Image 1 (cartoon, each protein chain N blue to C red):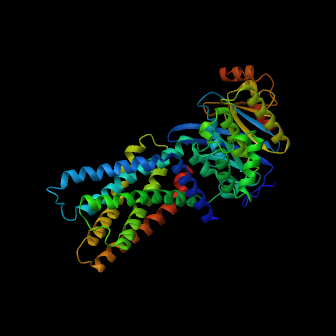
Image 2: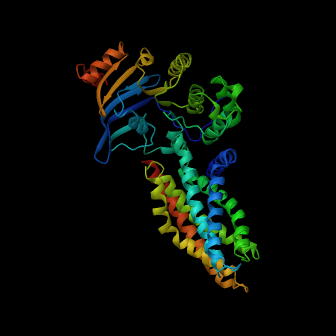
Image 3: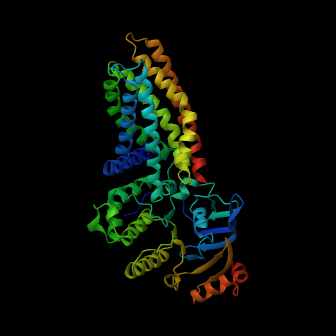
Length: 225
Length: 252
């Protein structure tokens, strides 16, 4: 039952996005612009700063992710469809998980575009270790989105939600972003130190477990009133 | 087709006992009491800000009362959350529809959430009842307000709820659609559905309501059974020259 509701909410979100492409276009445009601005600012005489690629990749993901979170819930607010979801006879955490996976899927699509772009502009060997990179990006994106989905749902009726979302989100997700940056930077070293990558990846997985558990625990009470 | 809802509960009566709701220091609803049995249409009447929508949200289990109790037969909302929600249908002022999805997709999604056995069949039947089977594959964004309202009503009814809550259901409907909605509500009442409707449209509510509850500043200003002359009664209640509250409470 839980998995069925997760699938229904996820499929609905993806269908809505495929029809409108609203979040995909806005987040991609924003993320690509962000990378381009950094590339023009930091790349001198064809030489990119060391380790810069990792930080710029994660900054782009975090900023565009915030935009995607806001839009995903603005869409649910416009026709009060979030209320309708909460009225359904289903476990509310399943609604949260469905929304979370939708956000993660959208950000993953963005990352598929961003990674080669950052690799190209910053001459970074991001694609040399694709499995490690996919694991780092997935765990980091999940941790960031887990907190973001909860806050975006909580703030959906707040008039100042666009201001409040980043104010609340970034202080809590900074450890995730730092771990993501360090893990990605470790992957860019000429000689891979698997121990270091494993350490940062394990930390990201820990953040994921903590954030998703807390969000599942608090989603029902914070959405009831 | 019989809808199959996961763990629904049935009840014969809705009881609202001394219910209040505050948002911080602001009082939205204060000490409202009424009962509605199976096959009853209760109207919540009052100006903007009278507390109608807040009361509906509490009846829908979306808000908890600050004090007082709401009982659905023997069940309290806090005790049977998920099962209870399966027995309640809500048509909000905003229509709870995704404009990017087609009418069929919207209804199929809801049928899935309510765990109906064959969501596609249930959605097709609902569209048929709305008279929109020929527009099944059109996105809801291309519908007129009246057509969307009809889809939204079927959305609220797709699982065969025992309690139907309607917030301004006549908004944006042309005369024919409004009359159609009144006819539909009467049929639902005859089938035993408890209906609570918040409306400003006194002309359409006239003759439809089994009980009218007049709200003013969150308080229950008056109540009347099978009210006649709603408009003059409404005017009198809102200007304070009419009060049937004590009589109705005594009938309780």
